[in-house]
Image (cartoon, rainbow over the protein chains, first blue to last red):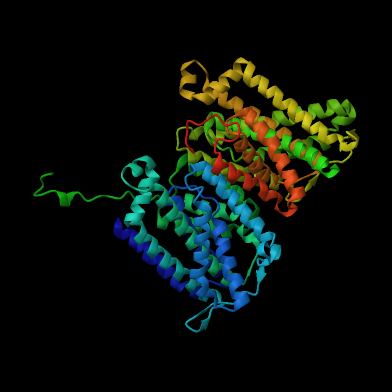
Length: 319
Length: 301
């Protein structure tokens, strides 16, 4: 069973590595946006999947990362990819400030406040707050990224850059999932009171998860800005946040492979049905209702963690 | 002074509309503890159905303005209420025993379905209400002109709220609704059919929301398939402002929010108009999560 899973993963990696050989530019671009959404989904997964917080304003942090990159790279000429940590940091600090007072709110209230948050950020961007966001037109002329002296501008180059970032994200979050921090979050999601009783500082852990997710989304913002070279407030609407949320919920919240599958389903699959473009959201909505009724945990739910008790037995005798 | 008065009456009219929508949120929340995200879209459906009925049936010509409008409102309310009941049966009823947030996700899904269904049926462009339905009369109050429609909207929403309040407080069925909101298990033991109560709540709430949609169509003259979203969020804010689950609270919260928004847009900044409600929402949830008239404090949010 375990081996079978790894074969699928290996085939998937081979497919991505060799994709430029047999896919045309259009499909490479589709893969690129799937990659971007996969990272965003994974970053939201920290908050929704592990932390169990219903956060639907993730586009706000993504926007802040993208705008940080766009503003600094266009006005000071700093190479785009160098701005990744800074963009992440800006988004993280913003998340820290706004989440501090609302983090204790119960599920559905948190949901509605985060929706308010993303709307406020979007309106602020449109209103050209501080005179640096370029208003409704946004910011254009963001330079292309360079990596090891190579200028990245072709689809397949972006493919490797973006999916490289996905790989780093997967590695990092996989380690996180199996760390003390990750376990504490899952505990907190399953039973907040019991977690608190066992010495998990719930508010602090929730806040840390929130800030980490925001930090990561901010970094993806850099990638997005560098790839698009033009950003505007409309790229960060509430409906974007709904897409990320869908990716996590449909794919399987709390499971890395599930979230990546979710990105393929939500972003990639509709490309096969371009003629039905207008029905896309309708189908999504119906799928959401359907999933909640028949498979609440998503297509690929996280596997149960098995605690190996055999090492506590001596000679077959339970202690 | 004149501008202040104009903004105030405008705020009151819009506030009445918010209050009507907020009642749907608050009633559903009271009984099911569910934020019915699709409620804003039921409001949109009300506006579109109103337009369709208005243009296809020419009620005003045969019945006169007053009875024509009355019949129109009743038809819209009935149809939207019916859609509300269907929504509950399809999307929420199977999830009664599930974790609460599953139902919230289902509600969001339903909202997306409604919004896109309206777009596919009526198209994505703004639809315009016929402008000659209501006589354009301007009434002088304290020497200041106020369009008749503002007063009509405020009166109509106050009337509906009053009727609802009477129904909830004074009739047997209303008492059953209050009991189910208080404690479903106990209500069931007292012989109240909770499923019927829920169905009734999903009939009344969307019916009021649909009426509000029709009012918006008549007041602003144009409607769009996405408008339910922003109205819904604001009405929800109003419900929280007044204390969610609290019926008089939703009325007070709605009217207050309408006035705050109108005055804020006039005196602070029109560009930030839509953000004002969200600031109010966040402030309320941080400092007084039970709302102004909130009485449900048993559960910590």
